[in-house]
Length: 372
Image (cartoon, helix red, strand yellow):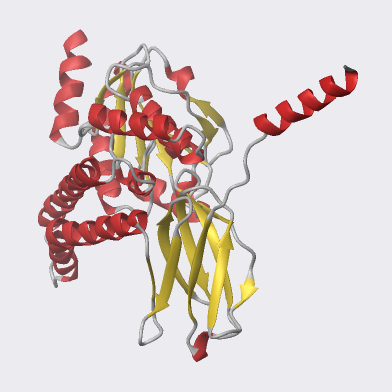
């Protein structure tokens, strides 16, 4: 009986143990110019903006190589020497890579998931070229003029932000129309904004995660939707805690009792710098009446961060961890594009998002001035 019990327990352990992933394969021909270069597949994390190896690093010595990747479905990157290409893989896919005739780029194809991702990337490039690039071209020309028109530059900068918002809405529409049951859904999630068709995105994510409950990307997609819910208008803003340029620790919760604008920005972001000029006037007008700004930087370089604060006379509160888009602060609020802001009432509840220029001034006038 005892031997039978032990055997039963061992069988249960085997049945409950996670199954090894079959993963996928990626093969292709290597041009002579690239032979001897290292080849590797890496998993891409949109949350950490980081890559981790998913296959062995191996020299591409032969005319044709095959990489076996024992990883679950998701977003990946192939690196071959100095070339790289992102792609999506599902369980059991047999993908193929190829190098362009000029040796300057890689492409990956051979599966339904990857075909959907390629179509998404084509849609993204088309939308960006149609909506955003023309405004950026006008901006470059305006800045290069012999006598730059500051007002025109400001109008174009704000128009660029509006165009990019429209671009993201188009990508969400494409996602809902085409990517629902595919791991490509994860690749598209980076450009969701939480303001456009969120309930529909949540339903698509729930359906995907229910069909694939054991996948890491299912958990990540559900977590992204949860963060959108946590930072929606009406929600109590998640805690933020960080270090100022002067090495002081600042917590968002310590600002309760004030109207607080949580503003995500960077020194290299022109629209953010323009908003800083508006903020300076509003801060001067309302700081004594209980208005505060908590500026959250996604900069990498401390000197540039400090310089921008000084140049913009941004005398309000600042935090940053100098990790750029890997910032845990940005991740907590699902911020993947700048500028992004959240207006909080004295209880810490989000009452508006992405108010800019006159819209922010009017709101503060009604809420703060209206109390006197």
